[in-house]
Amino acid sequence: MGNAKKTAKSVGIIMFFTLTGKFLGFLRDILIARKFGSGDMTDTYFIALDATVVFMGLVGAALNTTLIPILSEIEAKYSKEKKINYLNNVFHAVFFLSIIFSLIGWIFSPQIIGIFAKGFEGEKLQLAVKLHRIGLPIAFFSVATYIFTGYLENNENFGIPAATSFPFNFVHIVFLVFLSQKYGIEGLMVASVLAALSQVLIQIPSARKLGYRYEYVFDMKDKYLRKALVLTIPVLIGSAINEINAIVDKTLASDLVKGSISALTYASRIKGTVLGVFVLAIAKVIFPILSRESNKNNKEYLVKVIIYSINVILIITVPATIGLIVLSEPLIRIFLERGAFDSTATLMTSQALVFYSFGIVGIAIKIMLSRVYYSLQDTKTPMINGIIAVIINIIMNLILVGPLKHKGLALATSISDILTSLVFIYGLKKRINAIKIKDSAICLIKTTVASIIMGVVVYFTYGGLSFYIEKRIIPATSTLTFIRDIIVLAIPVAIGGIIYFGFCYLFKVKEINLILDNAKERLNRD
Figure: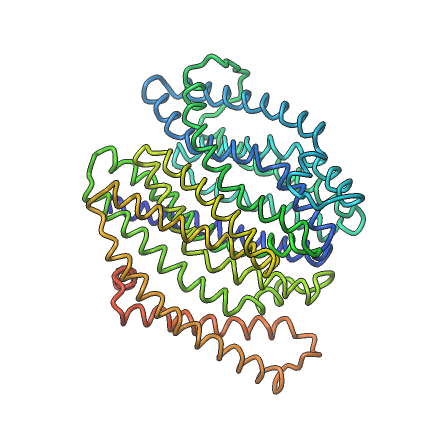
């Protein structure tokens, strides 16, 4: 690939900050679980938070997708000053939209909560409404974050946008450690508002260094603002459709036993860690490469980039799927089971994680291929795919929620992701005749076999090591239990990683060999 070093560096920066941010987010979730458990309070908080951010968050994400190319076009045709004026215009347009959204949200808060959690009633509904109204400012701050992110990434600054999770999680952690006992779940929502504001504030100094200056510009007739609207609508619809799956899951879960929503939320976030750290980082950096080669009509190189990207994602997500299935229970128990988060919550969350894990490969491929379709200036296909995903998810939810409860909701999402990823692949193969999925199919088979071998070894290693260390070295009653559990978990994971990459090398997975060759070359050079 052209400019491979720069691409790899950008991916590395995003992955580092994302991984660190996910760790802090995981610590935040541990503290939430410890302080508030997995029951009515956390159910209402998560529902209220979703109801607050879902719409404007989608607007911000869709706007961020279209903002970068428009900023580049304005700077190329006019000047940097014109680009900054447009940015301020977008900022004020979004601010106006946020005010309208907040007023509607405040007035119709009970009805909005009813849509997200139809099973809430009485005091639980009242608390959810209160938390929703407290959290309404998050809507504007989240969109403002996306706007500044678009400006910084347009200027090839990937570090600061990727680091916004640092202050976001830090604010939550400080509240949970020092103030949660006094201010309770309402205080947690206030902390969420301040955390969202911190994401905006951390980006302003870097934006100013790159020339941004605030001015009052509000022109709804601006042609580029209208162009952004036209480009954003299909992306917004597609993103909204994808979010419906999660909303449907939580709505149905609100009728199940308490803690079901929280179990799905915690499990989904762990799954999101894998996707956020690796898959999204790759997709974000590969996207401009795909767009450039598509515009050049260089189909041969475009196909190579697509196949390479899919194979790299398979190499990451297939073992992650097996690993999460095998280690779901100890993973949840070690990191979440403390305080109000009891063994029942651990069981429910680990069960949800297992069934969510089945769909990791599917959703990862969908994320990657959606960028391919966007690079081909096709926003219709991802939107249609999203509609199909919702239909499949709803059907499978209704079939599985009865016998499997919250586990069925997680499994329905996975089935939807797998089937729609296959639809994506089929459509892309028809769109680009040169694409041959044989290489990716072979890569999938090889990584699956290597992952299964890894999973078997990890399962028995963890079981044997756990039994031996608890009986012979550090008993369950010891104050060093947490350290013991971390060691017992880390050793099988390390062994599993070595075995997996070893078998991938033996199976001659080309991308693994390429990584190892690059590593050898770097070591020799050093």
